[in-house]
Length: 125
Image (tube, rainbow, N blue to C red; front, side, top):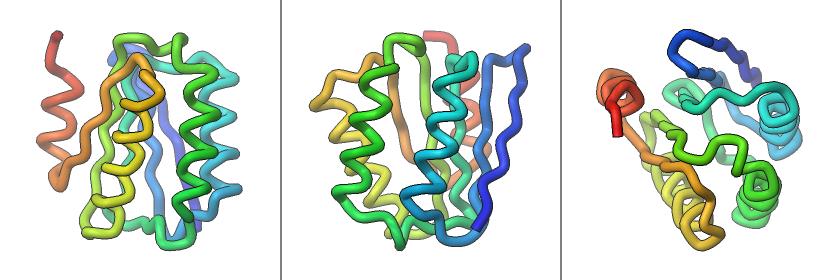
């Protein structure tokens, strides 16, 4: 598994591209690097060639707990998750529900199309 990250400062966009099955530890390492640096307002997680099959619901809660602590740095931002399988779509919706319950101050949406995800990220609120 690998997660590669690229940053477009002009668009205030960080893109995480996941290939293969991601583990909780790998996901947390990526999250920590993102949040401890200068997080961009917009984030795109590309799971079209990746899988969350090794991540449990407890792991997802731990990830959201970590993000919640730092979330004010991205208040008003957006996170798009692009998936190609039902498993990642469902788990991403669980993430969105947890984000909503914890009142994390940025939006999250799940997409099946990279084009639609980028359109949403580019929209002005």
